[in-house]
Amino acid sequence: MVSGQVEALVFDVFGTVVDWRGSVIQEGEKLGRAVQSEVDWPRFADAWRKEGYVDAIARIRRGEAPWASADELHRRKLDELLERFGIRGLAEDEIDRFNRVWHRLTPWPDALPGLTRLKARFVISPLSNGNFALLTNMAKRAGLPWDCIISAELTRKYKPEREVYLSAPALLGLQPAEVMMVAAHLNDLEGARAAGLGTAFVPRPLEHGPDGPRQAEPGPSIDVVAKDFVELAERLGA
Image 1: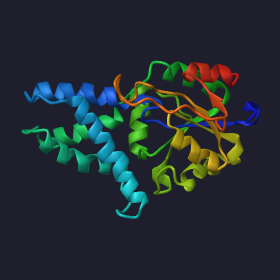
Image 2 (image 1 turned 90 degrees about the vertical axis):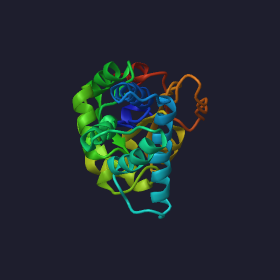
Image 3 (image 1 turned 120 degrees about the vertical axis):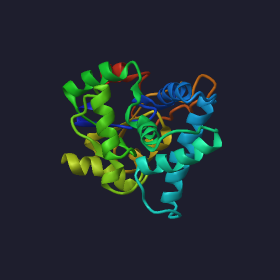
């Protein structure tokens, strides 16, 4: 794809723009000190992400559960995890606040400078399975300079469903080829490419921690590969 075709960039958020794992661990450690509870917070964060989000979305996509927002999915699993990890004595408002840690995730260091450069040339927006309120609150707190918010909640489907990817060009008044999906996950980019969007791969090798699984290498079907958002801006002439 020639970058001159591209009018808008849409971004996966969890893991691509923000460090969900490090953020959850950090807030979990604060919570653990407050309730005087020793918890393996890296294991807690990994379970919350995989069981409460990735696996739950897979069940919805298979038709085994009705659609529910990311906030709802996170809260259902949180109640179970608090019991599993022996965390007790929290008031309801404290549990609700901890559930909203997903609204307060910290961007990777290159995210804000890279997005700011990209925004000068392109329309930029998330295209995330996170719900609208979550993405809005995250952007407000972290200073993410989005031009708009595009959430899978608007389609009541989840990536990698084709309708989610096509919602971005439809809402922006563009053709699919004029929109480029930016993600650290190749399955996300495969879904975007199948829907006719351009693709940019930005690896995040620390998404699952220093001992996490290695990311797969991108194939030749990916339009642009960059080590971070600043390099992506350079590659796209922003």
